[in-house]
Amino acid sequence: MLLRSVLASAVVVGALLSTSAAAQDAVSPEGALKAQIAAYAQPSNAERLNVLLGQLRAAGFEPSVETFAGGGRATPLQGSNVVVTIGDGAKEILLTAHYDAVRLRDGTLSQGVVDNAGSVVAVIEAAKALRGRPLTHRVRVIFFDQEELGLVGARKWIEAHGIADVAAVVNSDVAAYGDTMMYGQNNGPQSAFVTRAVQELCAERAMQCVGFPVYPPSDDRAFSAAGAPVVSLGFQDEIGAHQMWLAFNGGDDNGLAEGFTPKVFRLIHSADDAVDQVEGATIAAAGATYAALIEKLDAGLR
Ligand SMILES: [Zn+2]
Image (cartoon, rainbow, N blue to C red; front, side, top):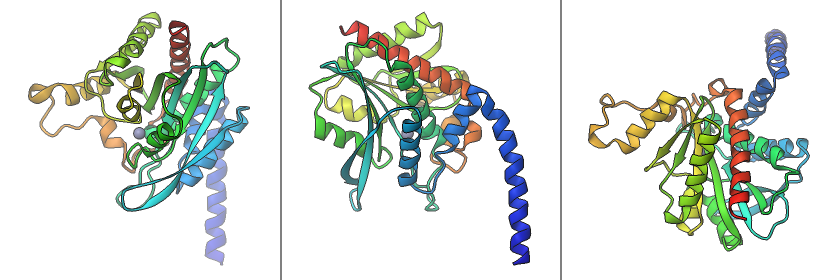
């Protein structure tokens, strides 16, 4: 009892100290974004879903939840995609990010910050920026569940809605730190105009961008498999982006040290994928860039 109350007061003091530090940090817009990302560190994906819905409602959106029968091969598991719709054109541009986190080997859920709460918050920022803009397309912002179980949420969304009205898809996975935007170029010839729009945007904004002929898979692959034009984007530091390029595209002569793993692949799907890895400035930049890309696609597809 006594021990417990001593522990409890220690916890309270600790909480007060960390709250005041966090509160100071949260005064800046970048600190606020970081705090928003930190909220996704939860014991279950159901709780991550609630955090997402709370943040969307706080931002003034009315998210709809589309449940589906998903799960892995052996274990059925209901999933929940979350959708926010902006504008009312006949054709759609999708802006997507998965909000689920992977289960680690010890049975706990990854904090899922770099993969992929950073993208989730960046996409919410983009949605806020796009709201009220004169768009000719309907923009459907989709937060997918069960990406980590094999792109299940994205596949189920395509199954339910089809892609006949989908003009383009922009997906974000692993956006957390640094100033370099990565984009995949391996989503089929139908996606060439989307990657070209990315390249134009990088030039216009004088951004450091790295195109990957081979880029690791995310929910984008569910869309390219269905024939939709799609690009997958991510953010990290410049060195890391180039190391990752070499790891995926450099072949046997990539020049990386024997056994070298780029930092981002040491972080994700590990206990180290935590909020101290995030830079608020990256999330703000990612949100603004995604919104600008959607506007460019909207104008170009007119
Ligand atoms: Zn991911």
